Image 1 (cartoon, one colour):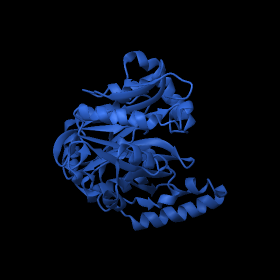
Image 2: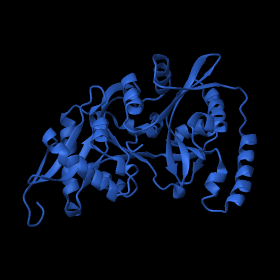
Image 3: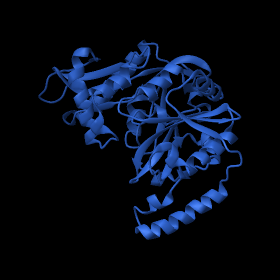
Length: 359
């Protein structure tokens, strides 16, 4: 109970709560300077938690009387842990109102949510807290850190980045030198057939299945998951790209365009390949002709990856950014409910930016 207030009540969200809940989530996101907070509305919230086929989100609330003062969202996905089919919950939108902060409300709400998750046949829970929130998940929820993801960039037009700090003419000179050095260091030796397609098809899903089956832990990239995540997301344009050689698809790439460091960046959100060398060729070819494919003056490609998977992306020309220069490191954390502790080993996981709920 907060001082001079009504008793607190913890419950699952009901439709009668939604009209109060969604504006509160938006308000908390804006106060925290979250990416895309100002475009967060009921349509995006509903897509996020209810539009995925067979979606059964678990949304928990803390109420003081009839007022929501805390919320804890957990969409549930089909996943694989230790090569076995499981249900994976992901902690996404969580927050409390300003008046409830520092009063133990989040700890109580998290305890209620974790107890109920265990009752709902959830096997594993993952989340991506920022560095500030990481100790809270460890202290109050018994989460374990699997790994901090690498942040990687692939320079496309370096002058656009340098121009944020130097006069334009100097940026053009230094940028051209960097791009020339990069292009001579990373050469494509087999031209790929690259095409943007409007939707996923069965052949592309097979590429994802073959790619992800190399790992023991992941969220399944089924047809309904990929269509929901990229084709159906409100007010977002994604670029679904096939790369093929001799008319046979070997790589699928999904990009979004974001403003990063004051420039346009093509963000690699998800990918799958049956041939990493051919994927490297396709990525470099795509970078050299980015304007043709993205209809934007792209300065760089950006993505995040677990350290053991970064080698594949570095072969594609990506460069790892030092953590100190990364404004928002992604920490993959997990809570084991029914599976073995071996599931915490980072080398068994495949994750991409598509799991991060902001992009």
